[in-house]
Length: 480
Image (cartoon, rainbow, N blue to C red):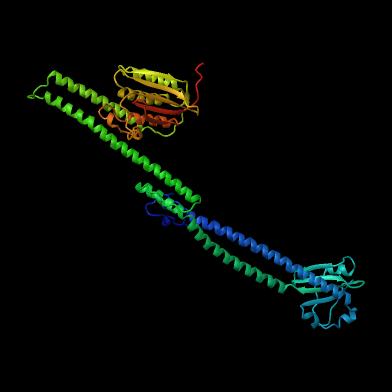
């Protein structure tokens, strides 16, 4: 036989064994649909279980009542039944009206029934009652669907009474149909109610999802309206808090970039002007610069480069993560302050330091803390009068924290400026004529917050300013 031609079913241009159909990601069921299906299944399962238990309970009760009634009839008939010859003459209509079949079963398996009446089913259980081997019997004849009861009726015989179960089974069938109908209606109603509940309950989730997509697509950080006081509302409030934090972070970044651009513009402009002067003087035909002016320009350029270097270094320091960080190094704060003092003394000129330090330890970053203390010391030296003294103290407050205090006798800070001295690029009126980037105290506050503390400024009695860093920790044992 010729082998069937198989190439006709292949896609033109397709490689052998290659499935041309694209891979499709299965569509996921939405949360609302899953909630609705879950609620419908729960209600439907409950309705089905209740219906089943109801049907089984009613069926058992109906069959029990049926058997009790049939047994009572059999007992009553056995007490008043006539002899077999007279039993045959009983009118058949008397039993047919009640759908009853009756007969006398002899021990020799002879069955006597009223003339013209139907014979009840008989078998081994009924014959055992007639022979005295059993007190009574009750069974269902599978072939005819008749419930049969046999009770003793004198010596060597039993009265057999049978009644059809057809009417009872029809009633139970109608009951099952009614339960199924109402169960189906209940499931449909449950599905509708579950849909409404899912739509209402998940509306905050939809708003949260829309807001998340909006933020991802447009970076629109407007808060989401919050209604109610349930778990979803609290989740929405938490999301709004997160949006607020992101918005504040973006605003801080924008302010930092804008302020940095503003602060960089001044030294860059001066540097450009000085460089242009030097380049112009070096061109042919241009008037030369005398040594004094050239020296002044070169000095200005060095100063501007130093200012740019300090500003960029401060910006890099501030750009670091200011949130809590894992720190495992044990820091002796006295040593940190002493190292800062060594560096500050080298550029303090005639300024003296009055130092009073108490032992204190904490877990943190010694380099960050040293930079913060040095900034306070440099700031105090800058504002101190010539030959003045800067007070430097470290003492415990007795509540698990200690303070590093740096106090000067400078012009002080006005009350209006005190709340803002730790802001980035903020410079008070007294400091605008002095060199500096306006970032030193911002670095101090950031360092303190990274270590679980804070930074504060206050006026000093008798004139001047007190700068304070408060840090958690424990009293150090200096005897080791």
